[in-house]
Image 1 (cartoon, helix red, strand yellow):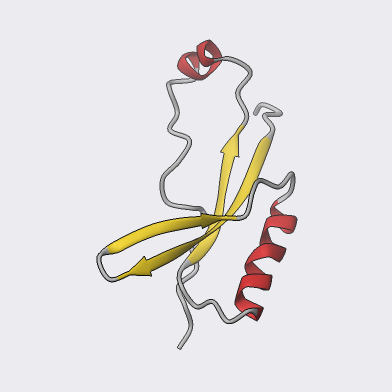
Image 2 (cartoon, helix red, strand yellow; image 1 turned 45 degrees about the vertical axis):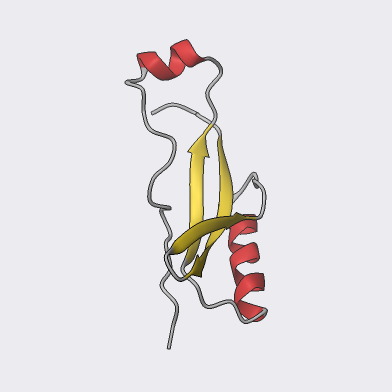
Amino acid sequence: MSNRLYVHVPIRLLIDHDDVSEIRAGAFATKQEAQQVLEHWRAEGHTSPMGIRSLPIWGTAAEWIAAGAIPASGVPDDMVQPVG
C-alpha cells in the first residue's frame, strides 16, 4: 500500500428544480476537518445531500496513467441523505 496523500473536499448539493450543482468548501488535509464543515452546514439548517470527496494527490500525469488512470471524482465516499 502506498503512502499517497489525499485532500478531503466537503460538498453539498444545491438542488433547484431540475438543476443540481455542488457547493464546495475547499480542501482539507484530514477527513475529520472536512467532517466539521458538514456539521457546520447541518447546524445552519442545510438538509440537502452532502458528503466528503477524498481525492488522491498525484505528482505527475504519468504517475496517474501508470496507476491505471484512476478516476478522481464520482460519488463522494460519505454521501449523507437528509433526515426527515
